[in-house]
Each structure stands twice: as C-alpha cells, then as structure tokens.
Image 1: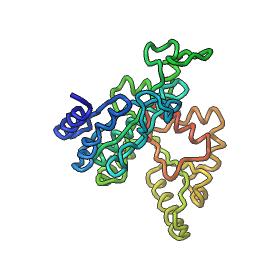
Image 2: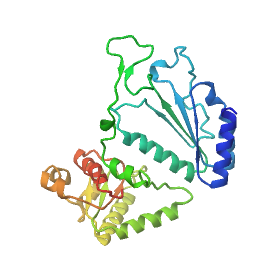
Image 3: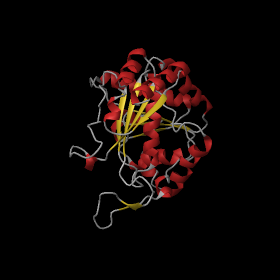
Image 4: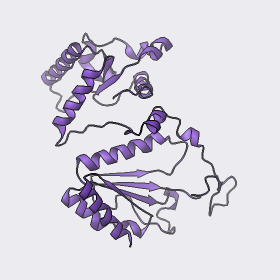
Length: 290
C-alpha cells in the first residue's frame, strides 16, 4: 500500500459514512500521490481532510531532504480551502490550530470536497526536548512548554467536553438551516449582546446604509439586546440600543469582569477596539455562543 491507495481508502470511507476522513502523509513526493483522490473527492462532492507534513520555512527551496513545494500543491479548482500551518511552538497557542482544524472540517462538510492542511514540523520531533538535529549552534535545543501552549480561554472546557471547538455557520446551500440554528440560540439566550464592526456597504449607497442601520437597531430593540458598536459602524453609533462609549466603559474592572453575556452576535468586520475584542475573548471561557 502507498499514499495513493491510502487516499482512495479515505475517500471510500468518506463516501460511505458521509463525513470527512483524514488522510495523513509525510512530506515530499508522498503528497503528490494524493492528487487522484483529491480530484475525485472534488468532482464527486465527497468531503475529505488532507493533512500533510512539511518541512519548516528554513528548509524550503534549499535542497533539503524530503522537501518539495507543498504550498497549494493541489489546484484551487479542486481544494475547497488550504492552510499552511507553522511548526508547533508554545509561542503560538493551541487555539489557532484548533480553529484551523474546526474550519477545515466545517468547509469540507458544507462545501462537499477536499480541504488541505499543510503542517510544518521542525526537528527534533522526538523526544519533546533535546538537541535539534543538524543544528550545531549554541542553544539549539528543542523546548516546549505544554501548559503554556494550552493556556488559552476555552481549552479546558473543550478538552473535557468532547464537543467541537466552535460552531460555525457559512452562507452556503444550507444557509436556511444555519439561520434557524442561530435563531434558536438567540431565543435560548438571556444575556445576549450585539457587537457591530464595519457596516459600510461596498456601493456606498447612503439610503441602503440607513436602511441597514434601522434594521439592526429595530432587531436589537425587539430582541432586547444592547449593541456594542465600534468606530467603524458609522451611523449605528447614534441609535438608541447602542451603549455609548462602550470601549471606555469596559476599561473599568468592575464592568469588564461583571459583563457575562451568554450569546454574542457579531455583525460586520472585526473591531478596532481592543476592549470589546478582549471582552469577546474572555467570554469564550464561559462557554458563550458567538
């Protein structure tokens, strides 16, 4: 058996069970052997999770052993999403890797096709700590602090629950079902809030912008949810449901610690306000649906 056979075995499992199987390979030419199964996965609409090991950036394009250009090695015609993941490091929290994995599985399912996670690894892989192979510089020793790596909001809850890292909703063929699920979360919430970022429309139509502002304001009033509006939200900041100067109020410890929403609905692009962003991050620790 080789990688080509493993790819088709994973494809068959996914086709039979209706959920993505993970096919894992080493770096180098092994990755290219997956191309036929990736093409068939895309053509037949079968979800597939392709995970390939790769050399770190310092071993790329310099003739290093078992290295080829694996970045987007599969055409975007076939792959629904690609992510080049840096080598494991306690400077990069585990939440980023979990978010990438969660996003990959979600897209493989909802867009019905293959996704590719290309994971870089830096030697020495084992043991966890020890001299780095082929690096004779002073201090070239692998160090990895597991507790620091996993010290992120929500990790303890996720690791003990067995549930998904995040619940994601994307505007695809299942958009109506997603809307129903979000509506149910809103109905279940008791301390929901709305966070608004950049709401400017691409066509800069003032009438449409005013209409969008009115719709959001009316929805917040009916749902009983206050709005934390960023500076990019434009005219929405003048609406009644908006909490004035929210980013400044959140700087007070009593308010930032006492604000415990059980549901956060974010509209628009990410916020400039560090205080509102921090509030969203802290809310994850308390199992908030966002």
